[in-house]
Length: 97
Image 1 (tube, rainbow, N blue to C red):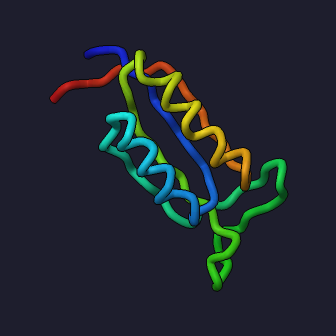
Image 2: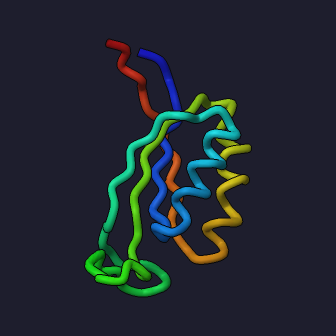
């Protein structure tokens, strides 16, 4: 096992392609996306069932090296400030298999 940073992002689904590009520019190429997540935040309720897709959120999970995290978060911050969202960073252990 080795220490890494776990990064969880909930953002407007329309912003996910931009967030992925920002991750890749910082050397982070692996991620998991769960589309149409529901919840309540500072901008109100998102139900995840909007037929037009205008008010849908997605959840993105990725990891990075500890030395990458500050620059990665600072590159994502403007996207989240524009339309809202959440970015959580936690310590984790990578289990090599």
